[in-house]
Amino acid sequence: MSDTELNNAAGVPGRDLDAAFWNERWRTGETGWDVGYATPPIKEYIQQYGNWDAAILIPGCGNAYEAEYLLERGFTNITLLDISHEACSRLKDKFAHSSAVNVMCGDFFLHTGQYDVIIEQTFFCAQLLERRTEYAQKVASLLKPGGRLIGVLFNRQFDRQGPPFGGTADEYTSVFQPYFTIHSMDPCYNSIGPRTGTELFINMQKK
Image 1 (cartoon, rainbow, N blue to C red):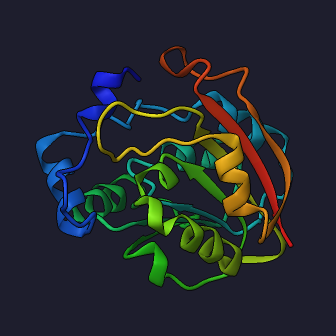
Image 2 (cartoon, helix red, strand yellow):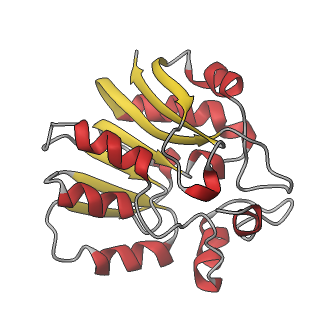
């Protein structure tokens, strides 16, 4: 995804990143984060993860291409969460015939549940910087003992006020290390072309 595409999803300075904000993005087609498919770093993790009945949460899921891939691989317990009613309406139609997918519309920070795996894909980067510690705490609270947060974080800064908001491995480590054992936070070798050299793959286990 180019800087232009990402910045097309950028916020209005001073505006809350609430449901109305994201509904507007969906209605106007300003979804620069959406590449149209599950990206290789996440697909590769899914391919080697063998617990088909694991409870999996994808917060801020958007079009939930990762859920499509999970279904293809035989996973049976997938929860999709998004704050946008526009996004959720599309998801409910998309997965209407799959009993393995539960679509929930709501605020991640108010969500309750217990999961084995939480998949991070362009959701953390959509949070205001001052909520990053709260995000890490919330993810930890939603994971079962030994549960994992896996996914991709941007290893770069952006030219405009976000979202998206970038960062560095050192910054992310300071956010997550109090709550997680960080098994991996390494540059992705299999990013899609426009994101080459700008992503970190994360694999963290709840302490």
